[in-house]
Length: 369
Image (cartoon, rainbow, N blue to C red; front, side, top):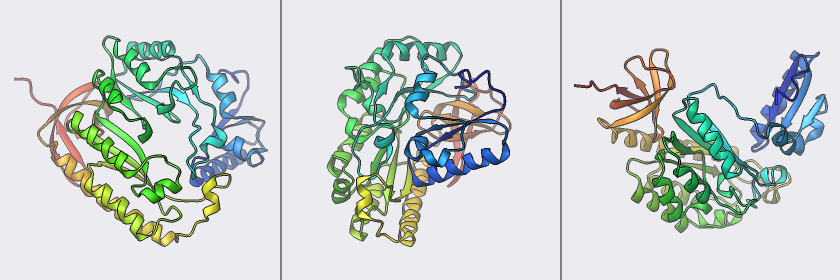
């Protein structure tokens, strides 16, 4: 993006998002801040919110939606200033979830060809990155625009030598299968799944137009548990969706409590114009949404603590993300551990977890006797 406008002085790029109402509000706030703070700058507004509400960004010298942005950055490769390499393998989502605005603004699926993905992985490896995170708007849709699949791409990647460890950013319940699990086991795969379940009540899932039921979610969790020891399982959950009365929420709460989830992202529902769920209104009071959020937060805090306690005295390789004292490293199963000695930044270090409490995980580098 910067190369496209490299001849422009005082360039300001504001990247916008509209996936949630809060994200859209923050995007507009950032844009107004840019107008105030840089009155003489050439301001570019980019991203989904520009396409959804272009009038809100009328003060920009240039607006670039996702399709135009993807065209600009095509065939460019980043050099991320972080310990892990985030590799975007696809963009776009055309799934008809009733609450979601994304298919209105990023409906076209654009997948990176397998040779391009392999080239970028090879480059990241040569730069010394020890972990790759595969990201996209909906990575399960990878390849639907080019007669291939995520599984086929991962199978091709698995044939590479000396791979960094591979992490999936998030994958929808629709795309889980025994074939996916088997190909992941052929990779140096991070034992961490993030699954946007959204609800664990069949009636709410139907109103959300999610096309799976709670039985399917249970089978996914069982499949994961059977194949990966000490695996971290995170989820996205929407609370307060129209029609979610006490019984429906109780079903979701019990599912979270009973299944081995270790992390949650909980989102109070907010109606979005131009989605089919907008017609349902917003009947659940905000006070009730906050109450439900607190319940799920309390549950997952205790489940995460129990998960980490079970890892005591076990050894893991961590990516050193923060090397100023104290060092912090990330395990493959998504635990950030504080390490009791200096470590080389961006390195992969074996540690043993030696102490946990509700808020922290501590580790030490074992002596090599």
